[in-house]
Length: 250
Image 1 (cartoon, one colour):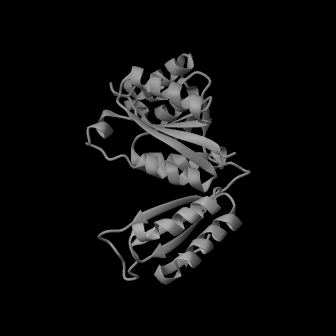
Image 2: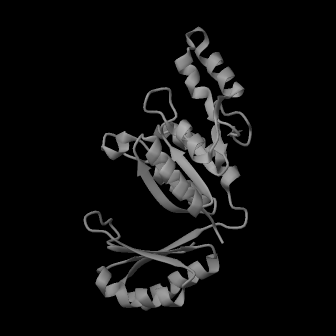
Image 3: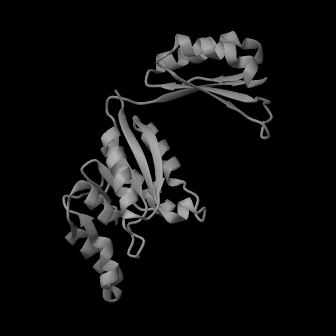
């Protein structure tokens, strides 16, 4: 069975529409590439009670939880304290992070800067496979704590790729691009779903951005078994042969 995960996006700015969340999309792509199944994405405001409640629910339902946002030095950065509360742990200043902050800010380093060295007790720091990353990803139990700034979030995902990878599982994807509309494809699509229950099959119509190939519906087939995924795509393509624009096997 695949390792499962959830994303907890934290921030009033996401819920108010001031900032568009791209972190959950980046996380989904990373997890899929390493064989981990993302099951839920939850967004909550910068409120400890909401963060704790979400963490409690997510930790009980998946193997790994990834938080995004709320780990800076300002009043609305309450993620570290909330994770500590959810896990029944205290917080403390981490000497490695404190040293990095003092080295970076030098004489400008203040107590406010050093707030970013606060971690939940028991936190493990991940500096990447080569150990050279200037700022690590924090992990405590099954919770990975990442920043909300998209550029930093993406950079930190790379540091834990090898940590979260499922060594026994990977996902592959095949596609069949079709002309016509979804209703005309429903019967053969239903047959493929019945015949390949172990393959995840999706149908995605395009309305206004058809490319020069002229396809209007993309049917996707993905799963952990390349042979089964390709077999499902090929069986469906044979059933709708007159409407197939292109088949892309895994």
